[in-house]
Length: 190
Image 1 (cartoon, rainbow, N blue to C red):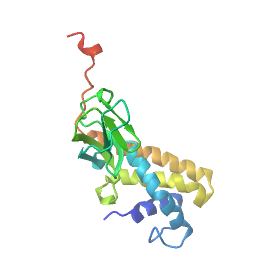
Image 2 (image 1 turned 90 degrees about the vertical axis):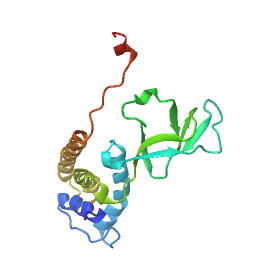
Image 3 (image 1 turned 180 degrees about the horizontal axis):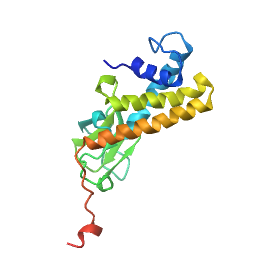
Image 4 (image 1 turned 30 degrees about the horizontal axis):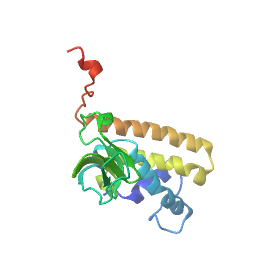
């Protein structure tokens, strides 16, 4: 069973630092990890459309409409980190909505279908290669504070680059290939 502590300890091991038993224990390493863990995890989730972190929802319109230009406002789900196109085969630029604050504003009627990256809180729901990449990214964040070594930080950054590339490659292989969106520039030849 994976845990946040296990991910944190992988990061600490990569730095040659002492491992922890809890994110809230009274130690320098635990305090450093506890401060960095959630922001780093959310940033890594947001950077890529990870298959394990995609959710679908039908959003209800807000009672308060936007002041101008659009007719409806849809509050984003509380766990939403990044909005994706509702249909992977639809060109993201062809959607008639935009995000303002924590709302999608559009002329579309309710319910609004969305796909989004959510804040995965259970490490067991994360792909194992993503957990390794997250540990590597944590190591980069913690290197300066825990080791005061630029060499360790550079090594951690190189490990992160390799880990994130492997995770993205595995994620891409497990997904159905996406066709490029049709564009008049291409279809004019037909």
